Every structure is written in structure tokens, then in C-alpha cells.
Length: 172
Image 1: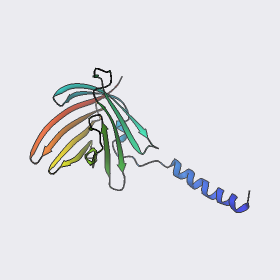
Image 2: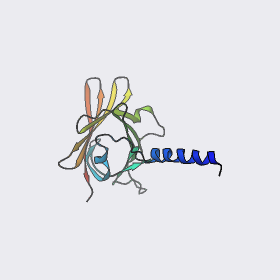
Image 3: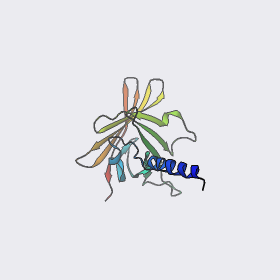
Image 4: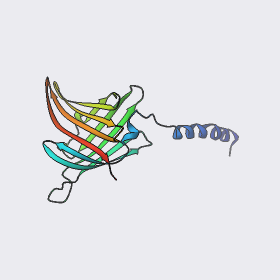
């Protein structure tokens, strides 16, 4: 091996190794999301139970939530399924949130992306729907119970309609 190539390898490889092993910035509540959960509560006026698995993906840059309803369609597939990605942006101290689900209607639209600045034990995600309409999904962590509550609300001007309220508890 050429002497200058050896020097380059000796200098560059440790730098790449440091980047590969660098810890990704973690927001204040991500670690509490990791695990296997049972989601129970009301969505769209119906009692529901879903299973939610939360794992780190892509070099711990994102938390991926995979949500599956226990209720099934006649063909045996879940009535509802979602894949959610949550990312912490250290520069802005905000979470970004991408929600993909089986109710999207066949296309990806801008209102599946939400942003939130944590407020203590809460992450108040908000999507812009249209005009003065926003959809809010506030994640609240209860440290004592090691559980999460999701409050889902549609905001149209001054009017707030509750779409759902669910609790996530760890699977045992």
C-alpha cells in the first residue's frame, strides 16, 4: 500500500468511526416511548384497543411507532394500522412527527406532518389541515404510572371537537 494512502486511511477511518458511533440527539421524552404498549380508549366515538410497538430506527435518529387495531375487517386485516416516525431536532428543540395510516385515502398530504415543542411531560403535536383548521394530538407522559395519554382534537377557529382520548400502558 502506498505510504500516502496508509496515512489517509489512518487519519480518515477514525473520523468516520467517530461519526458512526456518535450518539444522536435525544429529546426529553423519546426514551419513555420505547417499548410495547396497549392503547385503550375512545376514537371517533368508539371504544378501541390497539397494540403499539415503539422502537429506535435508522441509527437512533427516529422513534418508530407501529400501531395495529385488534379489531379486524372481514378479510382478517386490522381495521386500522399506522406507522409513525418521531424525530427530535436539537437545533430547534422541537419534535417532528410523520403519521402514515390506513385512512390516508391513497395519497400522502402535507397534513400528516406535525411539529411540537415539548412542554414538561407533554408533546403537543399540531397538524395544519386547511385554513384555520388544525388537528392536535397531545402526547402526555405520566411518569408515576409509566403510561401515555393521547388527546386528539380538531380545532376549527374557536371550536374544539374531541376526536378521541386513549391511554397507552405497557404490555405485561
